[in-house]
Image (cartoon, rainbow, N blue to C red):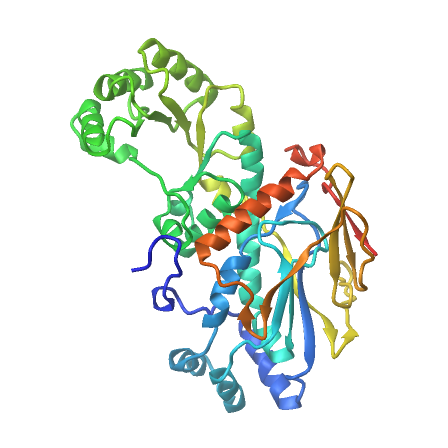
Length: 438
């Protein structure tokens, strides 16, 4: 078994090759037949716009995509599945049997911010290789970036009070792992998901649900069992029956050194204030208050004046209502060195491989995102945003997933600190930085 944060063997995860839309393969089949499969192409991933009212997005999932890339192959089982689904073109199947990505990938560092038009991922490869990555790249980056962008707003609203990701029971089992990773990347303190801990070194936490209290003949017995097993530093859930009595019983059982109580229902600002007063009166001044119950960034901001020590966030983080899609697309922008662009109304693209820098004032505050199909003449304070990720099919870094996570987390903290003050507002508004097309 790998240690926490070390790479998980491929056999322990689903093979990614069939996490692919069928039309990617039909395009490859046609390109192989007409001789265009080997044309040198550049694809870019970008978002045309941010979700309504959002001021910035956070790029997440790049590390997961790079982890999947070496395992994106078609073995006997995958080829058999394709035949069963009617993909019987022998030229295509032979090509897939030998497929290994051999191209180059560049992109924004994971954890960086993005804005409309930011070229967050650039794939240069023969057409057939590049187009085959579209579905995988978009499914990973769209999901993880949506979670990270929502989680970043919650971290900002919490004003340094820790947030716990608790969404595993509200989403797909693999999405839960990715959500724990994405939330931790932008500053959440921990996750309830154990697989996120195993794969990425995310700190994990958790104690008990209401079911554990209901299992026992009375609340005191449940609290005694938990304290005997986990110690007085545990967190006791005190709102199964009566909150006041639950708090009194918790302190009687665990003593004034009780680690924390959790409130999961009711008028949380009022309950938290009352709970703090009661805990203090019982001599448990150091006992923390954890609140849960469908929190989002607005609910967290509304609790700012309440004596809350940490927040547990689940449903609103991992579902579409709280984490609207990042809306990223994967478009061909260059073929054999010639820019190409889509002209459809409302879905147009800009041809040519892009360069991108973030422009900063002399005090380090970010001013604008500059994106251009031509090299950008650097100015003082400019930071190149596009970095090499893959060369000739091999990743440019050999760090473990946990090490990559630590790097992305530190990078995100640095770039968020450079945002102008208005970017931190939770109210709907314009993008924090203007995207300038040079």
